[in-house]
Length: 79
Length: 227
Image (cartoon, rainbow over all chains, first blue to last red; front, side, top):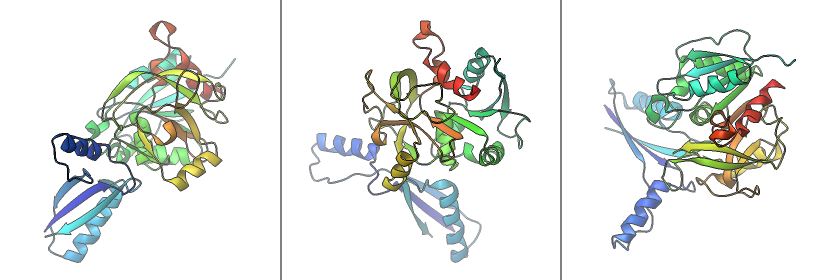
């Protein structure tokens, strides 16, 4: 089973990289952009097919290491 | 005569300020010992642990996020919880926030640049060991060198910092007025924990030891631990 973890800065926490990319898109003439956020995607291959167990384990990985929950939110997708 | 301190200086893969830090404390007449990150114990009878600057684990994932799980950090946490003094400089500050020993977090600088220069800092609170030799409102000139120094804390956390005098330093102009350097909340450059025994700052006091090299203001900061 594969877990895809997306980590982003929380809403309300300014994302300097997203802001810079937004500005660059504006400069290139892409005028329809209202916000850009840049995050990280972490792909984890797991030795289990048990979805419930996998989800619990990946959540713990996020809380412990993969995200800093002071400033970041995360989502988990399992396939 | 003042007591000579015994200072443990941690070393992770990618640390690069450990020798400067040793030099600074030895210049002040103290003894130092490097401690490799795989150690499970700190040396006995130490007076201070310094987590020096650098790029532990290449800043992978987030600055300090991997180093904070090194075996030695368990010992540092126990030492801090027992009231021992811990000082984190630059990457050391990042490691201490990641470890939860200091509140808040350090994000990428607002302008996305690695900022390396001398910077004025205003002493906000000195009712703590670290800045006890400095005066409130005093302006210090200390080098900064970081990409992830943009201090963030939520409103509730910020109120606590203010109420408990945990804000140590702010980036300032030569008059002590706050200036925006990297996007930090209210220009914060350093904070301490609630018990005032764990200190973290982005600027490098160990690089400000000689007037001929720009400033010796770092000496007085480090002398705070002599108390």
